[in-house]
Structure formats: structure tokens, C-alpha cells
Image (cartoon, rainbow, N blue to C red; front, side):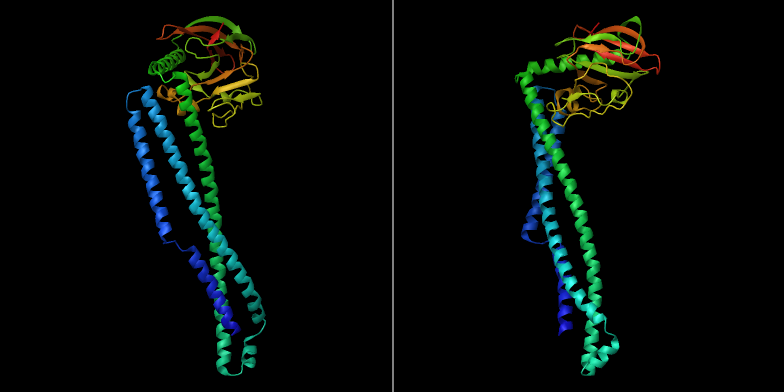
Length: 387
């Protein structure tokens, strides 16, 4: 009877693993599947709606409708991820219960099979009352050992599945955090636009026009179309200009637009500017929000303005490009925007200084200075400045 109990315990443990790992077919699981399908369908609908709105005329109403659609889309994605996490958590709990039960069962059987393994086959022959009991005892012992080997294999598979699904759960949690940051960004961007325009379509068109004018002027300056005057050699660290305080031509507020270029092609300024500078990142939904552009300088140059640096837009596909109306004008920011309590601007390298300006479509002239470096052939541009 002892052998029969052990065999039943082994068989029960393996059966438990199979039951717990089996794909559910309950009505609840079917409802989960229906909910997942509904979320996927709604996500696709809002993605199509955003595409439709993007192809329409650029109006304030259209931009607000896009924000609303993007916000709803992100909320649906958050719901989808939360649903996956919930289902996966249930699966992980089942696996954990399965592993604990199997481990306990295996430990109990291991003690008994160890005791029995100490006896040789001759023992069973001598100890048996008759031939039938001897055959039965030997048969049950072999079956138990076979079931134990099978159980160890299945237990190992369950542990591997547990680790895999825990990793997937952690990945989903990261995705959930990213989507919540995106949702916050979208809501802030919508609020800022309404605040800037006072829900007035004419104000919105003026913002677009000013952004387009600035973009066109900067592109023209990079193409060598600015009216420049050579000012002579300049040494590294020398003062070459100052930031205009307040709004100015093609600028809604005080900041330095700093560009690094070579043969007309812009470079990421963070590849040249020194790390370790005191700064505040205000390039996202708000200062210190953590959802803005990366601030990762790694070069040898001193900064063109004095710390503390206020960083308002990075290089490339920025937070502002992705989340605000300026994404309708350009999809790549060709420099970085920075500010400082001290308006003085200094040359980051020695070279030849040029003072220039460009007359844009809005009737004003965007002033800038350019330094052509002696050492590396690069050009640095400093815009929205006085000289």
C-alpha cells in the first residue's frame, strides 16, 4: 500500500501541473479574449482617425481634435497593457502555486524513494511473502522512479515558464510607464496650445506662421544665404554676442539657438559640449518632468553660455516636434535651445567670426553670428542674439 500511495502522489502532482498550465477555456477567459479584441479594434479606429485628421486642413479645431484622438488612443493602449498585465499576473500566480505544490510533493517522495533505493532487488525477493507481492512491490517502485523523473522534467519546465512570464510582466510594466508619460505629455501639450491661442483660430495661425518663418530663415542661413560681414579672428572663450531678452524676430522668448555644422550638414551639439554642467531640463511637458529630450553632452567644448543652463529643446525629433503644433512645420530640430541668467555668449572654439542676418517672410531680420573654427573646420551658429 505504501508504494501505491507514493505512485498516486506522484501521478497527482503531475496532473496538478498539467491542469494549472492548461490554457483556460472558461467563460471568463472568453470574455478576456473578447475584451482584448475590442481594445485592438478601438485602437485601430483611433489610429485611422488620426491619419484622417492629419490629412485635413491645418486649423486650431483640427489640431485640438488630433490631440483628443491621440489622448484617447493612448488611454486605450494603457488599458490594453493593464489587461495583459492582469491576465499575466493570474498566469504567474498559477505557476507559482503549481511549482510550490510540485516541489512539496517531490520532496516527500524523494525521502521514500531514497529509503527504498537502499534495498537491493534481492531484498524485495526475500522480504516478499509470495511471488505476487514481490512482483507488485518491484513494479510500483519502478513506476514511482519513472514518475519522479517525469515530474522533475515538468517542474523544470514550469520554473522556466515562470521566469519567462515574469520577464514579460516587467517589460509590460515599463511599457505602461512610458504610455502614462506620453498621456501626460499629450494633455499638457493640448493645455499649452489652448493657453497660447486662447482658443482663437487666428492666434493659432499666427503661431504656425511665426514657426514657419523661423524655420525658413534658419534653413536659409545654414545654406549660406544670410548677409554676413567678416569681423575677424576670435579666440576660444571670447564674448561674441548676447541673447536678446524677451521676444524678438522669429523668437517667442529669450533663448540661444546653437547649431554645429560641417559643409552645410548639422551635427548634434551634445557630441561636442562638455558634460557635468549645471542644468535644468525644461524640454518636456514641464521643467523636471522627465519626459523631455535627452540631455547627454559628451564632448570637449566649454558651453557658449554660463551655467545654470536651462535646456528647452534638444537636437533631432524632439518632445516639441512629437507633441506640439511645431511638428506640423518641421520634424527635425537642427540645434539645441538653451538659456542662462547671464545673456553673454562666448565662442566655443577659436576661429573666424562672421556677423550676419537674414530677412524672412515676416519682414524682420533674424540676427546671428557664425564662427568658422580653425582646428576642425566646423561652423558654429548662434541665433536670436544681439552683437
